Length: 258
Image (cartoon, rainbow, N blue to C red; front, side):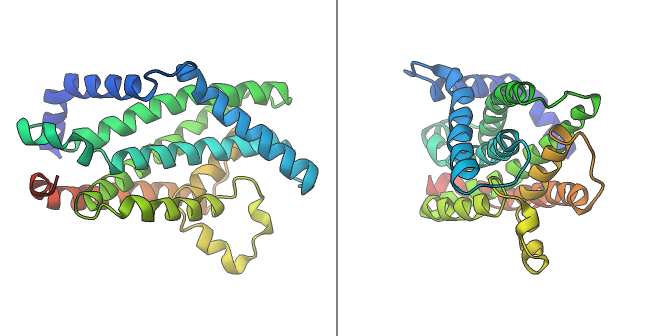
């Protein structure tokens, strides 16, 4: 761990440049630029609100905030892990030329996506104010699930980046896995409709407890001391450990396959 901290300090300026470049590349030749990061979730929320409020007649109070909160969490997880997955293979020419600690590549993708994600939270708070949700001091507790989300995504991203070096079809398989995760995250439906028999399956989803706590904090202004709080810690530690073990065990072989 001490070695990683020392390496991080040494390559911190380079990490900063990678993060800045990732953000610039993402919005290169884009007319709306970073504004799209705020418009996209809003438009998705409007569509889902219309469908589930008018056609399916859901009974979830303040559905726009409920839906948008879940969607933003899922979008970050989806985008960040996908970016991580290709972070090594997309830098193959650089990896072959100079030495850079290889974890810098997926880490920069996570950080740049997280910065954009934080910006995309602005529309959420605007919608909260418009729909009458009162902002309270307890809302600051949202830092907890967001921190857990960051480390869960980084751990899974490291695993995906490693697998993708040796098995490029992982990108296609992961798109199916993401669809399963989305439907298991209770983004546009209430988890209360899920029978206890299958509830434990939802809790295997790494972002379900994050979404649950995040909603409790910003929408209901409460901290729910239940299994989800523990799962956030467990998943953060578990995936970070697994991610670093898998990545470090295989990083010396990357140059042979990229």
